[in-house]
Image (cartoon, rainbow, N blue to C red; front, side):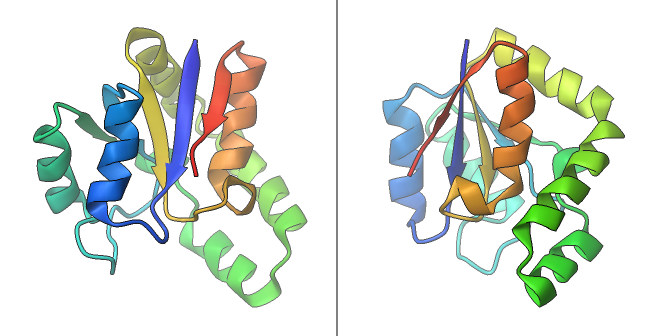
Length: 142
């Protein structure tokens, strides 16, 4: 079982979707707390419509997003080590959402999405460790 992760930073909507189509993604799982973006096309409604045109389902899993206070603290401190530790504590309280996302990944080819281009600077990296522990292969798209 393979899951993919992707960040849309620096990508156009067409480039982003092309990466999903090439990998035959069935469902894009948005793991942003708030599915809004200043970048054109990447807020929930327009993104959903664009994905539907490519036969890709949009799924928003708010519970796996990074809570705003954590994002603000990271912006102020730049301390990724603490950020990942705190996000891990957050995920421990989101086991239903994690389980549901894993179930979806067993049924469909999914890609986890957030903003950051580099998975090493995003909570999707920490989240991917849970998938690896559950015997998934994780591929981070760039």
